[in-house]
Amino acid sequence: MPTNFLTKEGFQKLQDELDYLRTAKRQEVAARLHEAMEGGELIENAEYEAAKNEQAFVEGRIQELEMLLATARVIEDNGKGRKSDTVQIGLKVTIKEGNFETETFTIVGAAEANPRDGKISNESPIGKAILNHKVGDVVKVETPGGTYNVKIIKIG
Image (cartoon, rainbow, N blue to C red):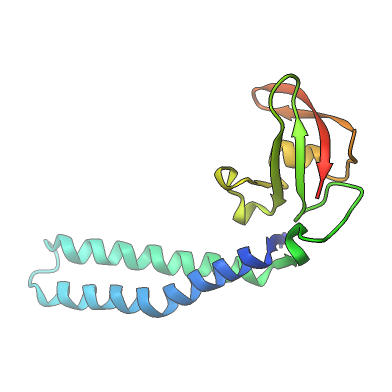
């Protein structure tokens, strides 16, 4: 099984979602199913079908989260106060591509990647390319859309 890298906050967020799904959401869906079954003919009951579909989704997400959390490796410190000479998962990195503005983001595992929040996956083209490189290194990033170079400006 592959390891899923998570920050402490990412692990807690997924654990909270799992707890919510196991308790409140399961009960909510069960209540909807019960109401729909009382609504008469199940064959033509759209509410019953919708509730069954939601139940399947919830149970699938619960299984996904259980597997993800079971194989998680929590990255200590999330880059706060942690120093490294090389780019590592959990650290903040500032890069510059050509004449564009610098970009700063945190390298995280795929499960909590969210580029809008400044979190990119260690499995993304940029994340994969810059891992284990040092400040000042110019790194080739290969993407489906082409290749380009980025310079690592700051780590941490």
